[in-house]
Image (cartoon, rainbow, N blue to C red; front, side, top):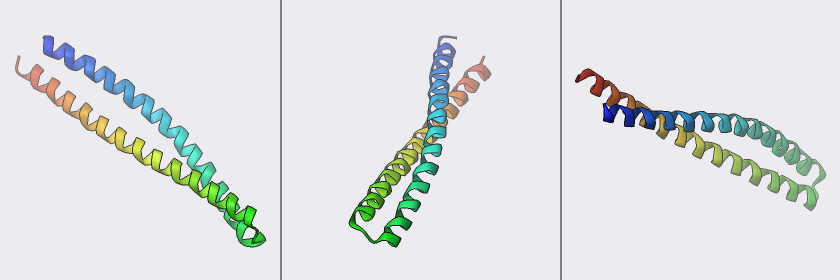
Length: 100
């Protein structure tokens, strides 16, 4: 019984973390779309205007885009790891309830 309570508490913690991370992922998806559009617009401006300032703005936008992509990928990996942990906890709970 004690082991089951511990597993349930850990499951709640993992579930809350997953929920929070998934909400954060939605925000990163929105940011990614924005920064992709911004980087594409600034790339076109840099090509058309051929000025140093336009090229600088494009590089800056591309750096922001890359940062958001990396952070989103890290977040996706964190979510995958927590999903695996959740599955392990559920398996442990099933084994405990099956051994009664």
